[in-house]
Image (tube, rainbow, N blue to C red; front, side):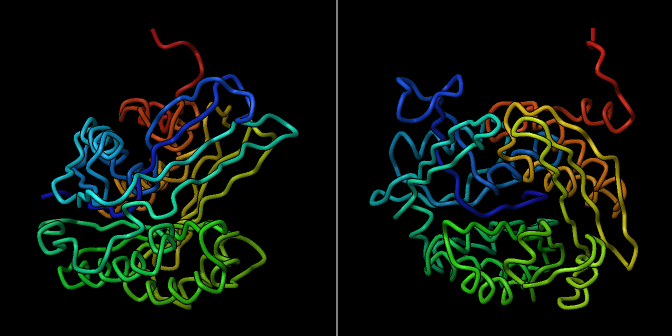
Length: 328
């Protein structure tokens, strides 16, 4: 049994080193990443048990994905294996001002995109879980993945498991209209919505004079237990301001804003989700959730790769006001 169960895609990530363009590089850095993969690992590293549900090919790339997940203590016993499909790839090209970083996906017909309703034993996977987490990326992968996504939400509710969804709109995967239709259906199962102001506007056409008004409009439309909105200000490609707000029981919770020097921002939002869920699920403490979510995410920006390798002690130190002097 796992405290948190996540469901989604993990891909092999290939990146040119030293700011090379893909056209010019002779080597590629190989890692694994994916939204729900990142959240499952983040939660596990902070001290809760987690499980990751996905579908991967029975080949070295599929084994790499599962082995990298297990490396952090995440349960992979409900992963679906297939001999017929491929692992998705994505290429991350690091930019520097004024050239932004760029992602190229090679995920068509990936194993997870071909998942079908009924392939996962959700009653077994969700047994004893406190929370089930997934995202709009999973729903966007294909029509059959969309059906499996909605099935997972129905099963979570049948098993009385709390549901969190990261809206995670990806324009390269589906249109705003497609996202709106599917994610509106998903919201009736959702207890905790994690989103950004931009994704909220693009998927639900909700806008407001500030982030607090957007959160309240989301709550009024869908009746969520809690809304978490992450806030990023781009000072440059490699320097951002980062924070979040949460709305719960009519009260807005805020935390410190971090100015982060970015080593790798991919997975930053997923680390915020993991840190928040860890803090909030302990005893329903929203302030602890947002403090830990934003701090864990700020630390992630300093680590290469999608995965956050930071520790609970580092988060505690940062939340407590820890400075930048070398730790000896």
